[in-house]
Image (tube, rainbow, N blue to C red):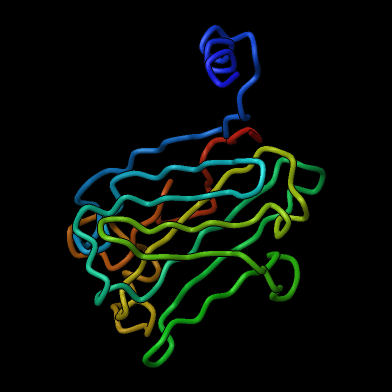
Length: 184
């Protein structure tokens, strides 16, 4: 029976598991401090969760002050959410909120730093049981940026360069998000 199923799957006569919709976005290299310079972003909008993966080739965990992922949904009212993980004292604080509301609980949300990448995984139930397209904007910043220990011109008008203490996709400044990523 297993052989018959495999043959039918190979011929496309039997439906396999649904594939998630995926979008890859490249980011300019050298536009931020190497320890947090994002090379690319992948957004995966699957049945049970939205996963955002940042590829940071020279990631240095000790220099990271935090990261934030903004998620927008393609539904009436265009609600937006923010997942953040920032250093607080000797540990990390994770928050989830709908941007027009207070902070919310999101059981099952995972935010991890791995070698050369940051992975944020958000259950669809935390996006009000999302079944629509999503788009994202991300930011990664240093400890100094988090504390405000950077010149005012960096905070007010960040210019891309190898010393910039923040990087973002699609951009560091503004509210522009990636293109829509369909649901499943």
